[in-house]
Amino acid sequence: MTKWFGLAVAGLVFALTLGACEARAADATAAPKREVPAYRLGPGDKVRVTTFGETSLSGEFFVGASGKISVPLVGELPAVGLTGREFQTSFEEALKDGYLKEPKVSVEVLSYRPFYILGEVTKPGTYPYTSDLSVLNAVATAGGFTYRANKKRVFIKRQDSDKEESFDLEPTTEVAPGDTIRIEERLF
Image (tube, rainbow, N blue to C red):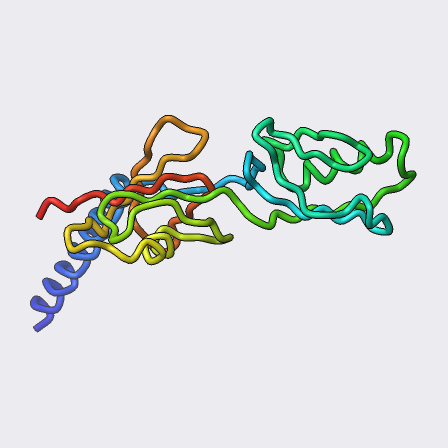
């Protein structure tokens, strides 16, 4: 019985070692996780600017095609490529330059650029972006997968890139405003 027990333990150790090697090999070939950088303002975005104690300097503004936001008294402020926090700092600096001593400003993005989805979804097209949007939520917004859809891979092209990247289709795969999502057809 001891001989059989020893063989069983040796077999178990071998199986565990083999399983660990296969897991490492699978991790090495897996697609990278998608990291969405901090949101940067772009043309078409709508922001709410609140200047505390100054209602005439508060309101909702659009980022124009020129990449600027036109603000009363201050004029046009560059906004494209800035985060909400960076635009807030820029706006406060503009107000300090002859208008207010210690301005307190908050900036909130009200509406983002849309995302685009095409390929094997029921209703491909342009849809409004919502914060914390995942690929699966985007697919659901587009009416779901077609019967031919590859539900394991997704291709995403960022708005500021010419290159489409491939990712594993997971519930946590994030979408950024302006992204183009493509669901390909499965082979079998």
